[in-house]
Image (cartoon, rainbow over all chains, first blue to last red; front, side, top):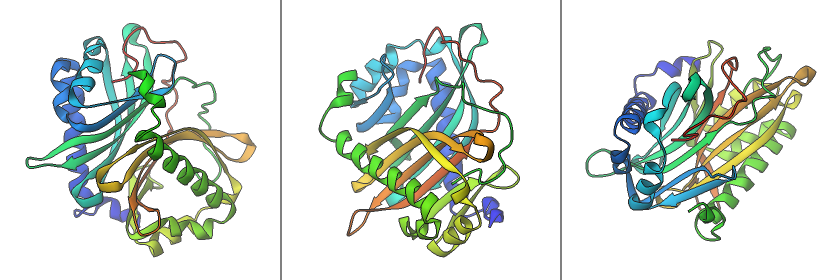
Amino acid sequence: MATQASNPTGPHLAQMVGNAFVEQYYHILHTSPDLVYRFYQDSSVRSRPGPDGKMAFVKTMDDINVVILSMDYKECKAEIKTIDAQDSYKGGVVGQVTGWLIVKDNVKRMFTQSFFLAPQDKGYFVLNDIFFRYVDESLFVAEPSHIPEHP
Amino acid sequence: MATQASNPTGPHLAQMVGNAFVEQYYHILHTSPDLVYRFYQDSSVRSRPGPDGKMAFVKTMDDINVVILSMDYKECKAEIKTIDAQDSYKGGVVGQVTGWLIVKDNVKRMFTQSFFLAPQDKGYFVLNDIFFRYVDESLFVAEPSHIPEHP
């Protein structure tokens, strides 16, 4: 069934939508962060780790914009490693992104992001956006595992 | 706005649904993998890295069951690190899981999973399931970054 990965139908279209969204999102985030809020709507939910490390969420375009502008995204760069997307509920698209944030001194922090793109008159908007930045990398190992590498 | 993380409405309920799903999913995966396909429906899409490292997907409960049974999940254990969920499109729930798979010799492999739970008569079913296992951990650093730690 691995061959289905190259199936030109279904997931292929969702993958194109996911790739386009991620490329646009991170490009605008680092070049014009004041415009990023436009990817969202007032019904959107955006979760990020708070100062205490616990996940906190914001809703509405205004609040999302306030949070985005409070960060200095022009000073860091996202290096995208993987983008995977699937057709989802009632015309939506679910996607997962993994990559690294490159900040000062070329320090890299790994991250993963999950999103749901909801359909609207013209294209999609980000209804759900969950981002997690890894902080405990001490347990990572480079040795290949012997058995099940994914559930 | 970080205080919203403890808001008892909305996201709190979605978080409860997400937590319950993840706990049940991984418990059954490691104790009764032959029953895991029941979390899905024929409209579900399940993506995992193929033998070549590229993501491959399967659809339908039967094909998903075949893939699950082809793995030896009783020989590994998932250590869940984070579960974050949000209310999503038309009654659905979007979630993100991070953790480690512990296999033989206590080797740990980090993973991240994104899922969409679609509503059905009784509860939810897994409509979308995207799982990624990290293989390149050489770039991880433990040093705190100076600026934006999340987009």
